[in-house]
Length: 203
Length: 170
Image (cartoon, rainbow over all chains, first blue to last red):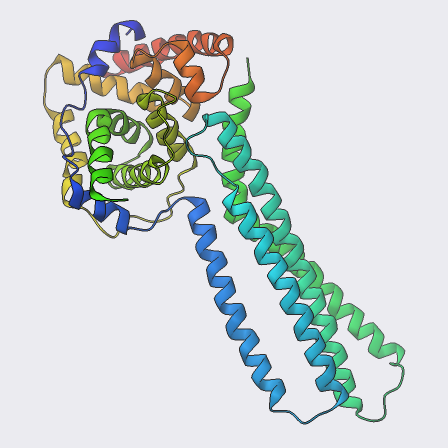
């Protein structure tokens, strides 16, 4: 079968038409996009909603407590977490919007998508790891201060050992879980796109 | 966009529908995957329609968007909604099962295309659609020299695939 002889055969195929009309178009447009970027934008929206709910809950929890040094620390931490999250969401949203150019040449679009996806995955990974360590440190400090009350003193060696051991297990667990999760979610897709780009560059 | 915009869009799609149909057929594994891909391509074409400036050929614009969508399309689950006009993808099976040399050759051609890589599928489709190397470059962003080399390899590969398929079926 010679490819040059198949053009007629190819051009005669798919004569049946879809007859897409205005109503059909509206039906399609009412469906949500399944592109990876659209999915990531929806995920970001979900993250923002969850953050607002969580933030509201902790705010309510703090406001119901009596005034103390702990309450002051809680509020400061809450503000820091809020600022970091806004920063994270802004960077992610910016990347998502600049992530694709579907009407551009295929190679440039795929390259753009791979670069942006890799940046986003790094951001995800970094944000995930930092936030777990931050929350752990914060939780332990709060718990320690609350438990000791007015008798605050330097922690005992055993307490430091337990604190470091749990922290290391948590950080390492989160690191490997995050790597596996991000690879499952984006790694295969990035590799697929990289293979296509590599094939495009190959002579 | 107003209804005149919708009409203009539908007119363009109507004229070049076969490009989208062929891409869905080559990249979709089954009728449901083809429907999904078709829907996604229409969505992406619609989103880009307002920025289309007539600087490039409409067919090249459609090819770019359709191929970009096909390459990056990530299908997690089957469509929950089947739109009425999508029955045309189900009809493909009926078309394929109709006898005759024409259908047999077409089935063989699609089976051979299915064995190519994602990029090779795109190149072969553009080639079969009689696009020049310049137009292929405009769509894919690969220089013409490299495209010619790839095309020679693909022709050889297709020859081998169809030889094996023909011997296998006889």
